Structures are given as C-alpha cells and as structure tokens.
Length: 408
Image (cartoon, rainbow, N blue to C red):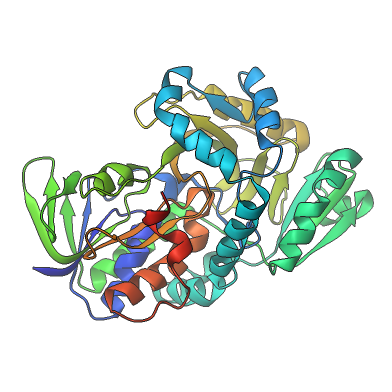
C-alpha cells in the first residue's frame, strides 16, 4: 500500500507527488493519460505572482453583460449550462463585496508572496531553471480611462506586496518595440516571470517524480470509497493511507464522493501558439482592455485568454482561438501565423479565486489540492509544500483556513 495516492498528473498533482516523495513517502499517481493534453500544457507560461486579487472585481457583472453580447468576446456562456452553474455565479458575485474581496486578496497574497521560495527549488531539482525567464511583465492600456479605472486595484496590489511601476506611451514603446503604437499607458510588473515551455515543465517534473520512485497507475478515478481506496472506472481500486485530490476541473465529483461540497467550474481557456511568429517580444504582455495575453515561449508566441463557461463535456469552439489571433495581429503588427496551433483547456475555477488546499473535514485522510484557476503553474510548488506539511503532520507554513473546502 502506498503512503500517498495522488489523483491527477497535471502541474499541481505532480508537484504534490514530488514534495511527498522528497519527504520520504511512497507515492502512487493516478491519471487517465499521463502524457495527454491538459491545462498545465496550454497555459500562458506566466509566474503571475502579482495576481493577488480575485477575478470578481467590483463592477465585473456590468462588464460581463457587455462582453456576452460579442459572440467572440473575452467571455462566453453556454446558456444550457446556466442552471447548473448558477450557484457558482451567485458566489462569484458575493466575492466582489468589499470585505470579502479584501479577505480573498490577503489570502491570495499569502500564497503568491512565497511562490519563488517554493518554485525555484523545484525547478532546480527537475532541471528546469534555464527555462525560467525573470524579465517581468508588461500590462498595456489603450485609453486614459481604463488606466485610471484600474489605479485603485494597482494601489491595493502594492499594499499586498506587488512591485510595479507605471510607464508612459514612450516608455511602453521602448520596453516592447514590437507592439502597435496605440498604448497610452503601461504597468511594468517587476516580479512576474515566465517559463519557456509549459508542457516541457510537466514532462520534466513527471520524469523526476518517476525517478524518485513513484508508481504510475493509468485509469480514470471515479471516486473515493472507504478512506484509503480510490475506485477507478474499470472497477480496480488503488490503495493508499492518504489520498491527494489534484484532478483540476474533475475534482468536484471526487470531493462529492466523500460528501464534501465544492463550487468548481471549468473556466475554459483558448490560445493559439505561433512557432514562426517572427516578432521580438521580451516578456509576457497583458492587454488590459482586451483581456488577452501574449507570451514569448521557447515553442513560439502564445496568444491566449478568453473565459468560456460551458461545462467539461462541451466541444471546443476554436473560433475563440481565431478571435485571439486576430487581436494578436492587430496589436503586434507583422506576426506570422504560419502553422499556428489552436488549443482549449479547462481551468479549474472557484468563484472566489482561491484554491482548495487542505484536509477534508469529513475524511481527514483525503487532502485537497485543486481549484487554482489561472494560477495553477504559479501556485503549484507552494501548494505542494503545504500539502506535504499536511501529509507529514507538520504545522503548515501558511494558515490553511482560507483555502478549506469547508468554506463552501
């Protein structure tokens, strides 16, 4: 019997397996396809340590209503999915209330402010340090109005520990000359970084976990039976003294199987990766008004964004990738989209933007590590460190109450 069974072989699950293995635990990892595509492969590659405020900012519902009018805008909603998702959206709106917004932000900052303490040793151990580019990031604004409207949030982020400084139009052009000359303001994010290839990071981490002695079991986890038993779709069972649920957007059903309720949705994201883009970007660029990003990865320029709520099973709508590519061509003139690869993935999103980390209040042998939304890569090693603390019965280095599944 394994000491720890980890369900999920994305970046968070593998990081948890890595941390537990280095603590001396015998680890088994369960996943339906270890080399299959997942959100950990198609993300924008950012180590987004400044993203310490929830997505549910004040006024988001008004903006969302406008975005929904545009069939290829930054937000899409399958109306057939609304009844199922309604409790999630109601909780999302509550997260924007001032007191709750403040509490969520401080909880996010607790994680994000220690990201490099945790992720740098993990990258070093798996041989990925050369793929980490600590060049900051640039948020750009087309209008004075949008820049002014975001100033309270930027000031709050500074209070939370984020380092940034404002740029004027000329400084934006000097920072990233390949951008179209339409941006009147910029915010340079000093501590943001990006990796060269998200898929390669997952591969290196998986290989390192295997080298540390972990056992890999291929199968789809249907639920947790008695404490210490994972039931697979084919009827097989995987035994372990402790179970870590790190199955991303598929974690809700596993939590429900032991009676824990969680509000979790797939916030489907899209991108297009251009291997022959032919432009020179130095760092990740966030286009504030258009809600998309462009990242110069080792594998090509990745243009990503969009949020689509349609559930896990709906087919991809790759016109969203096309729409993002059109925005990229507009704001990064001259990019070459030859052999562009389109992608869609499932971000595991909670309504309050906080991940679910910690032991189940019903079944303490089960530990949760999911719901990171846009910050799975960013918070992966920190989540793993906290999970390892729980598994080893150590005092967690960050208080876990804000991330408990009991909040739902």
